[in-house]
Length: 240
Image (cartoon, rainbow, N blue to C red; front, top):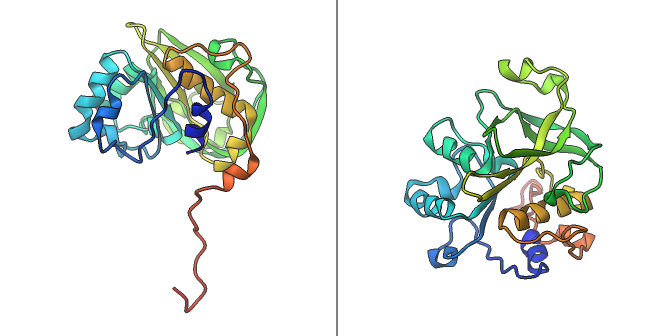
């Protein structure tokens, strides 16, 4: 909902939000970009067989793709391979690692997606890394040190001390675009201006829309982070 509000503030952007797959698929007609922020592991709504054909047509038709955090987690198989070809990378549990720790992004790569993005720290957020990358066409945007104790797979353990790619931009052979960011597990991380700018820029770029020289600007009220929250407090004993 917050991303929707911020995207509405961007010129020439008309975002539509759905919880899961849209009830009326006509809203997807002519979409310049698909953004998904939700569960992974094959639980993505577009991964369901009854939706995959429509989603695939959007991708092969040139729509951009943006996946955030767990959204890029796919089981090994044909669908995951296609996602890698559209997004530029995919998380598979065969080599990938994940967890929560402090990260600091000290250097920001020069790219349209990083306009207005300054070095920033993100304490205790959740991250995925050691992904399967598409190779040519992938530009790392955020790279940082991870705790070597988080390297949970044999392949990840081969790269002790290596900085890991956390965000990237991908230009497909057909000119369509993908943007991925494996952070944003903690809701409060949207308070970081550089993270908001990065993700908004990435969506504009993936949609092949111009990214402002100083980055996408959107008004932000810290109180907005308290909107729409589920109440996860446990009821007191004897109460329902």
